Structure formats: structure tokens, C-alpha cells
Amino acid sequence: MQRPSLVASDVDGTLLTPLGRVSPRTAGMIARVLAADVPFVLATGRPPRWVPEVADAAGLSGYAVCSNGAVLYDIGADRVVTAELLTPEQLTDLAAVLDEALPGCALASERVGESARGSTDPEFIADEHYLHPWGDGAQPLPGHQRAQLVGKPAVKLLVRHSNMASDEMARAVGPLVGDSVAMTWSTNEGLLEFAAPGVTKASGLAAVAERLGVPASGVLTFGDMPNDVPMLTWAGHGVAMANAHQDALDAADEVTAANSEDGVALVLERWF
Image 1 (tube, rainbow, N blue to C red):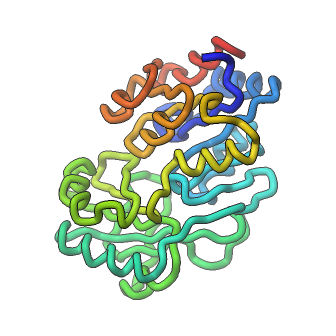
Image 2: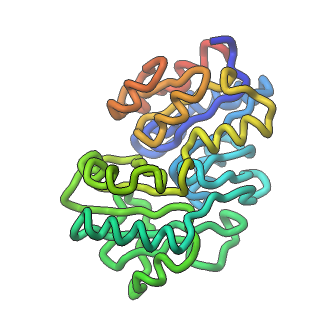
């Protein structure tokens, strides 16, 4: 690949170390990419409200593709630019399928406001027994009925099952939902994530690339999980981490070192 015209990276398991940090080596390389007038885009399953901390550590103020492609967020302006939504009807139908296919599951819906920092409405609504697979301190709001969970448009519906791996859940649910929604997962700890049909990190990143006038062939992407596969295959050059899920390893053009060994920086050092 020629020097990329746009770099995009997943966050957890890719850009961040296993301790959730941006290493000095990686931060330095991001600064060099930006100094070369090449945009660096975060492409993450995280909602916008979980992006500013990472962006601040990485020195980024441009675009972030959030919620697996459902949200385009302007970091510097703290503004949600676009959001692809699941309707209440879609959420209701999907919830019914999940309850039947995955007995004992718990659901959560992810909503989005106009910014990451200023929303006064709850953006995360969950069944009372829903537990995050991440130790991020976010907890479901108790007492909500299912009708409240699916009653407003959402950028993502999440389903959690404590006794199943995500791969196993996907095999059970995939044939039942088909292409009526976009299904993926960012951890194998019993979690599936659903968005509006056709929404992926690739679709979100393509929207950013179009805004910036960069063809797909000029984009370099990094990722580690099945939710990264669409952008790894869409980009001119897709790089998987050594610690990646097998689906990402199979989809990538190249495998770099693990996120514990500055794998992103290692590749960027070729051009910057």
C-alpha cells in the first residue's frame, strides 16, 4: 500500500493496551499521522459518550464512527452528526425473537442525543438483570419495563446471556434475523449487538471517507473482532491484531503485533 490517506482504528483490543491505555508509542504515532495531514478516525462499538476520554488520550478531535457504524460523531465539536436508528417496531420484533431464541437473555437499548457530554435523557436502558461484559461502571436502570426499553428509537440493541459465548449466540440468532437487522459482536463474553439494516463500521467509515474525499483504496484500518470485519475488508488495507478473533484474522490483509505490543504503531511507523 502507498502511504494511506486516512487511518481508522478500532479502540478496545486494538488501539488501547489491555489495561485500557493509549501507550506513549501509539500516541506519538497518532501525532505524526495528524502532522502529515492524514485524518485518524476512531471506529468503535462504543457510544459517543465513551469516546472523549480515549480521544483526549490519543490527541484526536476529528470524526469518530461510533456504535458499530450507527453514529458519526464530531469529537472536537462534541456533536452527533448522523445517527442510523432502529425503530420501536424493529426493536419490539427483535426483542421477541431474542427472547425465544435465547431463553434467559437480558436486553439493553443504546440511544443517542445531540452530543456526548450534554444529554439529560437516559441513553442506556436495560433489563434489570442485564450486566455489562465490561467493567466500565455503567449499570442498567432498575425498574424499567420492556415497553420502555423498546419504546423509543435506538442506535443499538444489545442482548446478553451469561451462560453462552457470543459465537454460540450468533449461531442461534443469525438464521432467525437474516438481513432484517445488522448483527455483530465486539466481545465473545456472551454479547450480541444489533443495528439498523446495512449498518456496519464499514458503512460509517465510508461516510467519513466521502466527507473527506478519500477513496476506500486509500484507507488503512485496524481491528480485532467480528464487528471490525466489514471495515477490514472494505478498506484498501485491513490490519488485524495478533490478539484478534479468528474472523478478523481471516478477513485482514495483514496481521500485526498484539495490542499489548503496540501493533498499531508498528504498522504506522512504515509511512510516518
